[in-house]
Image 1 (spheres, protein in one colour):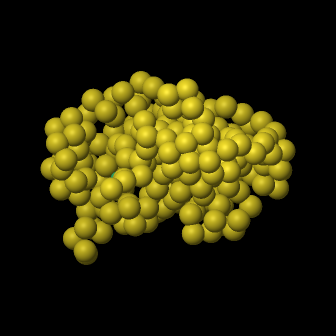
Image 2 (cartoon, helix red, strand yellow):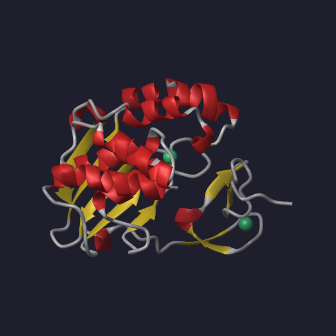
Length: 225
Ligand SMILES: [Zn+2]
Ligand SMILES: [Zn+2]
């Protein structure tokens, strides 16, 4: 473990584009995340960009909130850890949630001012990450991130730090955001297959039938026996 912490400290100290506080937090993030990869630092930088765009600083209490749009069962989920550590909007404090859309993006909300920004990694940055040997030579072949050749993994980790934040992400906002004003669904529907009552916004269409998530089979991620 001590060797690992030392390696983490060394790589973080080599980054010249972050200030001392940002480096210290990245070091903590890396220790908790556990391995070198491209996704976590990408999320970390996206997190810094969101804070800057919203004109705010890392959340120490519970006044801000993050909704992250990465999904499950796809590459780059580590992104969410980076966003979490940079913004201080953590899962444990109940101010980070996932709205899985399979996108490397998130929304940062200031609950007091009711302002928010949406931060999305630029498509060309995503393409470059997926073209890098970390993915093509290792992760695609099923090699776990911690077992990737460490030089390759470190390269993936450091990849974005030379770039300006505005060259990494697109930012929408700040815009007004009032979570209470969202369109909550009050339409009751019934699944055409099993008959269960289901909120309409959770219905899917399959073979022309309106079905609940339990009956939906196209890309159902729940494994069934
Ligand atoms: Zn990772
Ligand atoms: Zn059903």
